[in-house]
Image 1 (cartoon, rainbow, N blue to C red):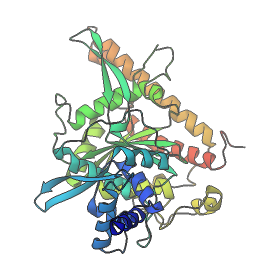
Image 2: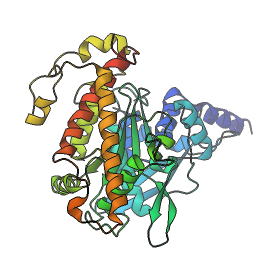
Image 3: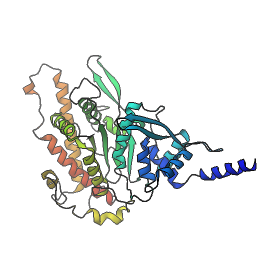
Image 4: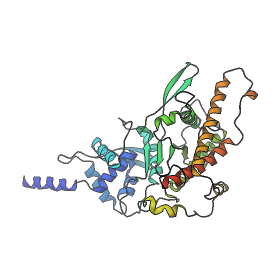
Length: 401
């Protein structure tokens, strides 16, 4: 009897939650699902598989009055075999969400199906590529930007249906959203595995159908036309920062096909790009850290990194990058920001006018047309406006002195 009591006490000591355990719960609250390899890379760098396996089993077991915080009962099969996927119990999710200050609009009640589970962990690789890691100590959930899964969001909008002669209530669900808190910019992430068609608008999973939904969400007015800032996007987010849709692909061929679709899409309704996973990681790291990879440790306060942020980043890699390099223009930041908003609003209004006039028997030649090259002009201007916002936000300013 005494031996059993002593064993229970010893097991209880083993299950005492550490900072690493709580941070792991934070990562799983943000990502929802992580593979065994992802967990080991984040939280057990340089440790043996036996040691990490022991700890994960301890966290997945109920000990005395302590409930389990992890679940290891999920996974998916592939040509490479079975992949175990870890998730949180209800108790673990409460701990993890509090740890990282995660406030959710929707809490999923059920796990995703096995066919979508692989998509989820592949999507999370985009996020993990932005997490500072030194390969020696457990990683920490970044606090200078937010990563929000689409299942956690409630983004309603309405779209008029001509067949029904009424507005259908719909909900936008990106795969994830990345919010750059310092740059005050929002990225909507769509992870393209290649399983869905690109150009068939009749299929809701096609890339073209996704573009249509995003364009309606960003540019259509939720209220009166007299208030042109009242879009569905502005209603969903208290801070309607400049936003961009990133289609992340596994292959260059699919990236190029989606790029062609974006180039042919109706101009001025949204800003979108198609990038491979490696390109997306580099571009997002540059936006967040000013470099191609995350720092090995947590970034220093903005005041300590201000000088480094203004240093030139080396030779341009392309003509587009050269044209957008820092120092090529001398315009007040708030002027660029306001001009970009005005141009985007004007193009959206022109698009709405085209749609409204299209129902009347008017010759297509008589309809107002968007100027040639409007999409490219808006893309360049949006980049300059983002840099203007970024420069002002470093000093907590709304306008330059």
